[in-house]
Every structure is written in C-alpha cells, then in structure tokens.
Length: 153
Image (cartoon, rainbow, N blue to C red; front, side, top):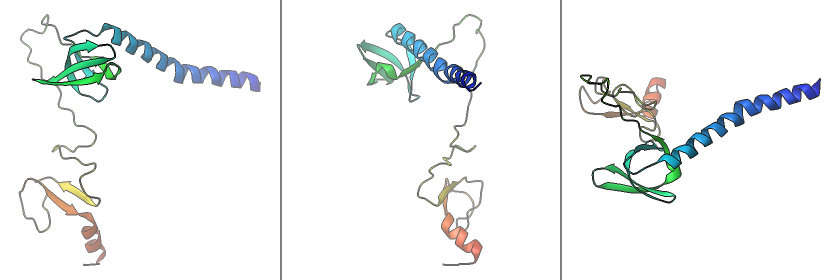
C-alpha cells in the first residue's frame, strides 16, 4: 500500500511541477527561434521594445526613439501581438489603466515610500501641521505613534 501511495505522489508531483515547466520551456524555445527584426517584444523585466538587430545570443532592442539597448535573447518573454485592422475599424480602444500592487489609487507608491517609518499621503488627506493641499507630504509614523501613546517628544 505504501508503494502505491509513494508512486501516486511521484506522478502527482511530476504532473503539477515538472510537466508545466517543460511546456513553458518548449514554448520559449519556439519563441526564440521565431524572433525577427521588427518584432515588438516584452522582456522578462516588463520593458517593451522593437527588435532592431539579432546577433546570435544577443538582441538590439529599441525601447524609445533613438534609444537602443543590447539584451540577452533569452530575456525576451513574449512577442507583443499588434491588433489587425480587420474588425477593429472605428473602435478607439485604450489600454486598461491597471494599478500595480504597490500603488494606491493616486499612483503614490505605498511600498518603500522612503525612509523607514514614513508613508506618503495624498493631497486629499490632511497632514498635521501641513494644512490642506500640497503635492505630497510625509508623516513620520514614529512621531505619530509616540503622540498616540502620550509620549510627546
């Protein structure tokens, strides 16, 4: 009975862990073979650009007008498919404005806001001693905690 259980767990681990990784490697190798000059691609770091030159294991990628970088070919994560003009006539679609996990609705960075113990505050919130308005203010959380405890410094 223990041998059957061990065999079942081994098969389950292979199906859940190894098989998807093998499929991803095959997909990525196929992508590397299909890359061509002029393709718009996304790197694994999230940078988008257009391939200007392919030189063996390296790619010249134009990420802005006149700005080219040399990257490892394997760092290309995906080819960006541009929508065809068929069926999209008259549709003005804009990309979705998706907030990254580290920002709030105002776009302020809520992770790593600066020095430890400080957090950014949007202009809609009032800041003690700052009044209303201002682009961005910083609250020292250590002072706030001390004042809440009654330990005025």
